[in-house]
Image 1 (cartoon, helix red, strand yellow):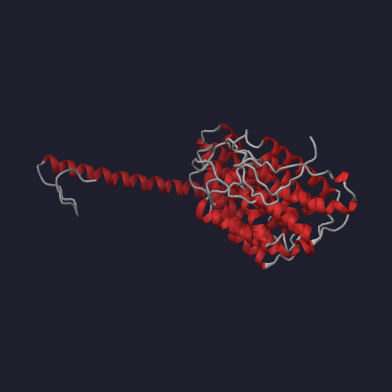
Image 2 (cartoon, one colour):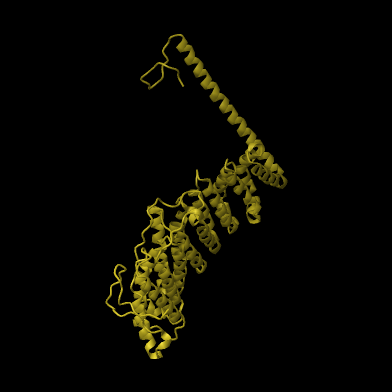
Length: 459
């Protein structure tokens, strides 16, 4: 393919009419060094034309010309020797903006995420313009990463407006584009220190919009992955604004139904905070309990997975602050009829650090979970859950038989009281039924308070 260029600089970006003026420009290797920058600007200008890819038969020659030119631009930026000037920076950002910043049109269908479904099975949407978009993304990535891009100069063009539009693209349905954006934004965060607070704030706002308004966004996982690296680099002690971000933005991300789309990345971010500042463990665990799912078993398993990671980084003082509400919830999980929930809760005892925390605080924890263990040992339907329960119970019996004996006596007393209450309740209802039957057979009306119709049986 011959190297290409473009005469007709006034031509508007429009894929609807034939671009007869789209013509060849010389290759960089064919011009003297003094002309290369000027040729670079011309090629950037050429690539500002955006083609319509919805019709694969339209402008085939021009599309290929542009594709080849974009590849040349990537090569030029990669091998650049000398700082990019103001004029060049302006044209680079102009070309990138013309190609990448567009309105994303979602496919006309219901929210794609359904609880419990394997998200990998969901059909992914591929942008037909990707042959050009990919190279522009690659160009932008190489430009941001280039040592010849002076951050102090470039920040005037890679400004807040540019970054907002870049962040908007994270809602693209094309996973290939989101993968590029993830790397570009991360490199931009590293290069433009002046923009770091703004990038964090803008990401915050995307999360707020997602959590409290739409619950629909394609790029939450990618944004969280970038944040995982950012949080990892936070200096100690943590700034107050970072803790506020954890409480107001990250923790509420457990609420949406589509948590499975991004839970792995979210869990990593949360755990990073606890590893940075162990005093946050109590805050995080209580927040997990606040958002704990009630009817969604697959989500409950995710919470238990995350809980283990957080507890792994939790120190005894923080553990003691939240252990009572925590093990009330774990007791409910132990008795779950969904075997995966019960099994995952029992697996917590396989973690040495968590087991040590439990053992050290057994006098508080065992009385809370003992009834759940006893019920499972007696009649849980799943064999694996039954076996794991017996293992956990044996651990406590071997460790502290006196405490287990006390808990068993208390459990038997409570069970006896519950049976007595149940017997009294049944006896009362039986007497009421007999009384109603007797009065009805004697032809007497049965009085039921606050009812307009007094005929019929009571109860």
